[in-house]
Image: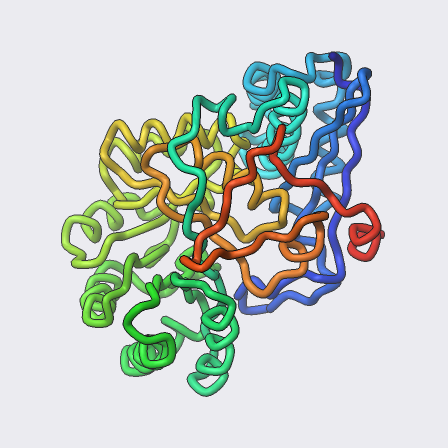
Length: 371
């Protein structure tokens, strides 16, 4: 079974604001699907957290290395792409494209074998997992209103992040967290994402340490990206001192970039993004390294339905997986597949057990979000 063609499918019309100072409009292209076709009629779909123009350029670069390659050897094929294109940046958009290709190849392999990807990744440690509703902070009154929707849908865990948290003063930060806790009550878990990967992040270790102490008073599950993503030494010291678990790693690509963070215990929770860091093949290696160092793994996923499906398959196959990120509200998650994701009475998601990623694109709905 050989790779015969690749389609690049940029998504527009439903893009969610990602929290950056300039904001994001629905017509912006931040997510791209990749569909890999084989000469035996089986195709697979992957997702990249990168714009279509960049993915198109990367696929053009990689195509001579892909054409005619096996469609059922995802780890070997994606590693060959990585090793053969290192001079193009050893990460960045090329690695993002490799991520989507790798996910699509695992989807093909699962379909060819008649097995869910999770079983091919090594076996199932769970059949259900808790999603946390992922959303942005807002002004207190608007925040209270926006939190009512995910709670009413049945989310038992919610992560709030980025502006305006950390952008004014400590009293306002605490007001936001107190507002969230008062709104959702004590039975809903809260996570806080400072968004330290925002450009020119102004805060350092002292701010992060004092903020972590405040978050502990509100029973926050973890504190995410409190420092810039290159401040390894700051993270090591913060993780040692913080009363709240520290999470991060979403901007890293390639397993080698994760090694010092894991080996030096710079964080309590590592957050590889399967749509950016090399796909399921790299994320599996990263997750098992985390397991070996007694560090928890929670996939980062500012995502599409395909990205979430990949996260679910990975979570099934990794013993230390605890949650999956569920961007809400987001039409790229809710309206791209034939069968939507549904929370059960316990606020959990069933992990698809059909062949491949276990989800099927709704081609008619997809047309609404493509050029």
